[in-house]
View 1: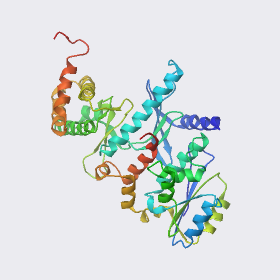
View 2: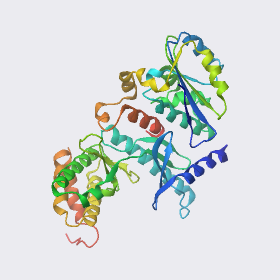
View 3: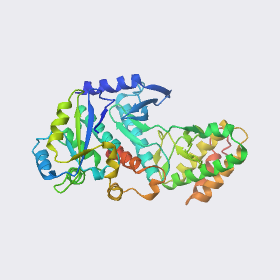
Length: 175
Length: 230
């Protein structure tokens, strides 16, 4: 159901993703996040191709936090910023964060090994049905993703959409 | 904080499998975020002045990563970049599994297949140069053939963009081809005709080939053991 990946570069840190469908309280959740009451990142899953995309963003965020080079003010906002192909922070939130009318949400937490309590705490706040994170591709809006990341059919001849997205995320700072 | 981050990577690399150590960088294989990954570490060169070393190393890392993305955007297969650590100058790349180098193929393949291979290499290099990407280290060891699961043609993948840069000059593209020619002919004896095929394919596929080939001819006349009487 949940998906947890330990960050090889920062072994004390693990990233857990939880995916929810038929979410009824997106507006409430978004407000709580803005108020800093949620210890996690709330992400719009329709903009994600695959959970790997999220892991790449999270790894980069933790790395930047540890080296004191984050562009945003918190780890969770940094994860959302890293997903975006542009350097505009508010645009990143608009596109990858959740909006009031959303009916699905991906919750991301970065934690130490034994923090299962945190997971159930957050899951309890979401009024929706939890589905396996592996099912995230069923929620992906490929057309919207291709448009935002400006992926051309030419590029898709040498790799998947995930490849194109991850490559841009990893090289954003120098392009 | 800074010491904390500089502790994690060396430990990670210490556990990874060292594949190659060159003059410029060390190449490791490891698992990263659940995927088989190649890590290219441009280590500190103590024989250089530290300020210069930092500038050069950083610039090379950035150029490598930019060239890869530029190639991919044009549909040229190159490893996907997963993560770049600009502090330790490490690039985390997709590991191209199930592949062999073009170099190994040339030494073991039948004649008919080789002609097709030369044709494809010419095409991919034409595409790359049309994107104004200069590879900088074209050899048959830096080209991989990724075997496809179905019985289709294997995928030609370019790797090691460590010396690459962006340039529109036919001179730079000519030199790029010259580097390949020298590497090709010295690694694979008696393959002049095969390389000619490669150049023919390049000329047919590239939009600016005549200027490039002209420069290639000029460059051939320079270099070691060449008469500069003119």
